[in-house]
Image (cartoon, rainbow, N blue to C red):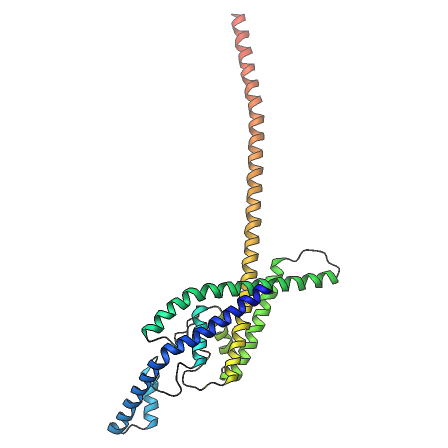
Length: 291
């Protein structure tokens, strides 16, 4: 438990520090870009008399990563926190990226050290939750009077079921906070926690102001989602390792039996060969005497 708490605290501190540093590197450059975009927009409004509706249509057509809307800032602490988490978990949505040299250089070193830390943290969480589930199943079977060992397949199946329930719960949260359908929320959760991260659905909208509740929902979702995913992956990997060991043991037993049969066959063939040679020698001696 101490190991789990230590890795969890270290991982949380690492994400927060990364978010603060990324924001410090990128916020000044973003303010300059937004000031430039705002001045260009005012110039276009004066020169071409573009209305806000026309400007909204133009913005939807542009299809740029950097929106023409300059308020609020993209590199808020919440978005920086999500970006830092997407880096170390290798999700990589792509909707927020560092644009400065310092930010990109820091991103390389941040990911280099953060990804192994994330793997260790998720591995520790997966081990603890798997052991907890195994002990719970074992206690239930013991109360029911069964003394059989808990199979890894049963643990893996239960963990997969709980993982699906977790995704459905997070889908309801996404429906509540973002207005997505349940399927869209489930799709977003699966793509995120499997670290695919297409970026078609993201936790925060760059053009919307997010509240403290939004941040808390994201934090709870990240903890639950990756904990459930790591538990399922660790349970499945443990089951496959055990199956691989059983297969190797069966192959070794088959090889031993084959070797024993081969030795027995050799032991039977040699006496027969000697007997045949002796009989052949005796018949030759008898023929010579007759001659």
